[in-house]
Image 1 (cartoon, helix red, strand yellow):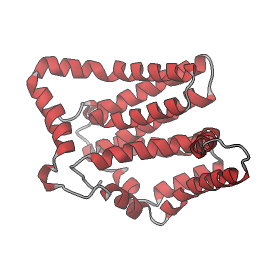
Image 2 (image 1 turned 180 degrees about the vertical axis):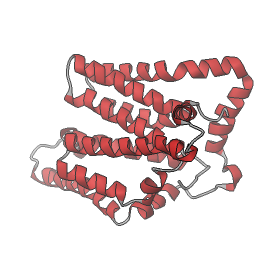
Image 3 (image 1 turned 135 degrees about the horizontal axis):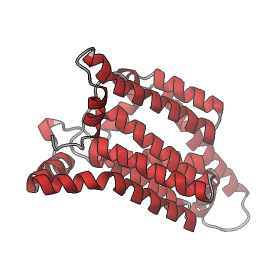
Amino acid sequence: DLQKPPLYTWLLRLVYSPDNTELRLRLVNVIASLAILTTAYSFCVRYFSRLTGFFAVLLLFATDVYVVYSTHLSTDVVFTAFLLLGVFAYIESLFYTKGAGRTLFAWLAGLAIGLATMTKGLSSISFMAALGAVTLFFPTRARIMSAVQMGLGTLLISVPWHIITFLTYGERFIKVYILDNIIKRAQYPIENHRERWWFYGVLILREFAPWIISAAVAPTALIATWAAQLKKSKNRSHPLFKLYQILTKHQAITTVALLIVIPLISLTRVKTKLAW
C-alpha cells in the first residue's frame, strides 16, 4: 500500500501474535490513546492549570470519537499521539526552556512529528505550518533556530523512507502517494464525498457539544481586554497593534488558537471531506 507510510503497519507487526491477534493489534491504539490523554493533561497543567487539565481529560472521555477510536485499528489515533507529543515538545522549546534544553526539545519535536508523518503521510504539513506561524508570531533568533532544528528532525525521520520508496517504485509512487492520495483528494470529491466548506466545523460542534461552548471563553476574554485597553488608551496607536500586544502577552492561548485555526482552514479547503 503506497497511500501511506508503513510505520503503523510496523507497530502492528511488533505486537502481532497468532494467539489473541485482535486483542494484541488493538493494543497499539490503546497505548496511543493513553499517550494522547497523558500529553493533553500535561500540556494543560504546564501552560494553564491543573483544573484545565482535569477538564481536558473529562472532555476527551465525554466524546464518542475519542472513546471509540481508542480501541479501533486506525492510523488517526497514533498520528494524533505523535503529533501532540511533537507540539508539546516544540512549544516547550519556544517559550519555556533555554540553552541545551531548548535544542533537545526542538529535536524531540522533530522526531515526534517525523513519526507522525511516517504514520499518516503528509497530513502533518498543515500542523507544521501552524507551528511555523507560532514561531513567526513570536520571532526571536533562538525560536527560529528551534524551528530549523524541528524541521531537520522531521526530515531526518521521514525523508529516507520516501526516497527509498520512490527509487523502488518510481512514477507509481508519485501517482499513488502524491497525485491520487493528496492532490486529487484536495481538488476533487473522491467517491462523491462532497460537502460544504463548513462541514468539519459543524462536525466538531456536534461531537463536542455542549462542551465546545467553553472554547469561546478565552477569545471572549481577550476581545474584552482589547476593547477595554482601546477605551482607556490615550495614545493613537493602531487598534491592530494593541491586539498584537495583547496576543503576545498570552502566548499559550494564542499558540493553541493558531494550532486549531490553521489546520482547520486547510481541512476546509480540501474537496474530499470524510466524517471521522
